[in-house]
Image 1 (cartoon, rainbow, N blue to C red):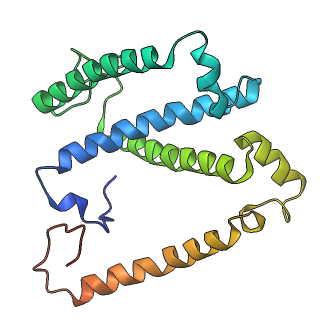
Image 2 (cartoon, one colour; image 1 turned 90 degrees about the vertical axis):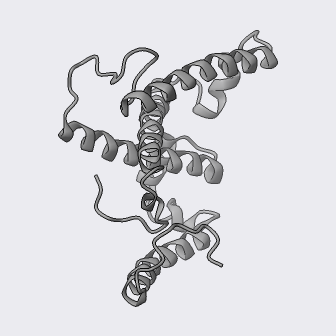
Length: 195
């Protein structure tokens, strides 16, 4: 939901806000599918998520697969965006809003966006864990449970960077509150470059 946290002030532009909300919702849906798929393939012993693309490619030529992907996803995305601009709701090809199970309600929309945000952070964690340790989520969990004091983010190769990120994230809210307190309120438009 919206609790007023918008440090980059992306929500200040009323024209782009619906599109950004739709983009967050779609990315959240993809992330929910991705995290469930990563954990499922890891649990049942299928190829790891970083190997799955090569395993699924099979005898297909990569250029052919990319060409098919661009055409099919281009059609689907163009239809989705046209439907979104026409109805203001998410959908698939001719179904706007897309709600086959009939569960569309304000409470379910809030749950969907919260779970989508959680899934986006989870996916980021899974990919980061592989980049740092070379292990899958369940392998990393097993290693951590076996020796929690020696196998964690602080003892990894990016431990110092992680501590710096925690310090920054702890100080950043103070900056935003201070900026809001001393601001005269005249500069409400988002400026990615502050000068």
